[in-house]
Length: 230
Image: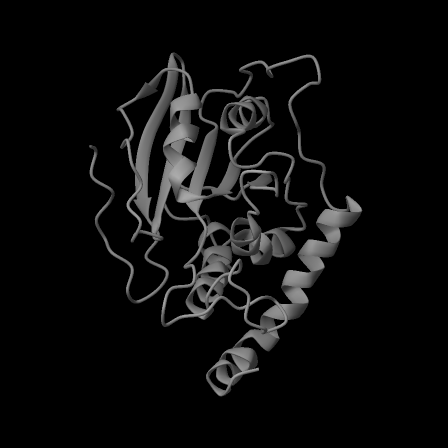
């Protein structure tokens, strides 16, 4: 372990138990069941009017000066940075406040999806980002879908019972938006590489899905503006 990582290790000690509990629950199938698409094909569009699906990008990723750190505090390029882990903790409070309801436009999820590992991507950061929230709510994270499976993912989500959170890689977030039927207004066509601080929401209406954006505002550097429609 290099000297610069030691402070991060100490910061993450409090997170390790929570994260590992969520990971073990996902592996064992414990917690609340999460609906998936039927084996026979696409799931029906059964979400009731008013149901909201919330989509986030995973937390901050490694760059030249900020290494990835796994749940044990060891350097790992496929994991979140220290700031990413801080975001994951704050997101748990954003979607499940200690008192009262979540901020306007958001809801406590009854199902959580994060990208699973497949030939197109490992997805560790998406799972790490929602692990504190999943543990807090006692929900097993559904990792049945990975990069490239966005259409099947949305089919499964809109067949679910209520508010849902999706944590995904930013390059494929527009593909998730495209998979919702009848979305208005039109979501942005790209998710900027430097934005980790926005929630995209899709709320079921009588004739489709209403798209909106909610700034997370959970860390001091978070911006209050949303992603430009391009």
